[in-house]
Image (cartoon, rainbow, N blue to C red):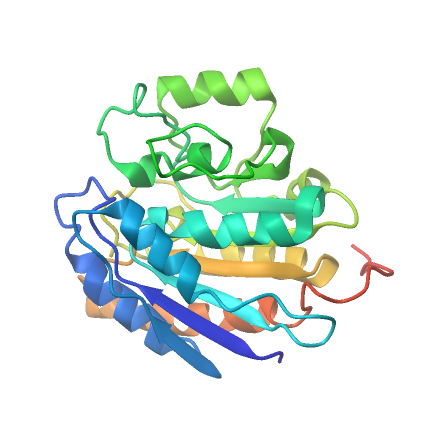
Length: 276
């Protein structure tokens, strides 16, 4: 396995869930589940998401040359912690980057369209260039660089934006559809909001949505992506510790996700991709 750095970001103010403060503990526990060579904890500023994003940018390891950089795993916190890591991946890999967004929700609202006003429901749209002041990517993603996976609850404004831009949307555990959506010769950033999982098997999240993925289905999809494409980074977010049995589900899943994503460093020279 390549070197792994885990960056713990216990941000919770970006969430609209009434139990969001649990995300502090969730970030700590997630970080502990990662077998890492280096560990960084970001001191968040509860009432200043812009300052916290700046601190995350400063905490991220610099991209190395061939053979130097390993996998950075961001342990959230709410989904808003992904702003700086995905920005960094976009700068490093340009148009070759594809962001695979495993989530029950699209996170594609703007301040005007959001029913809750919570930034965790806007961060992917902010990465595409529209969002709150100070929380918009300097080098936005093109909608063609986004793949929604496992998303099953979109607000009206999100649905319209997806339709208008043609963002690819993979429903359910369809590995073949995911491979087709990502395309050929890409570098992938993998985002996992744990509410992508079915709440019947994992319920320690603030915004559960029925009919999600099973842990084995999520892992199979991530493994398929990581076997075919180098991985620019992995974010795991939105763990609100509530049930002991959920920790028993989560710990081996986190280990397996990290192992899968660390196997093909994103700084390798382009070459022959693995077969389907």
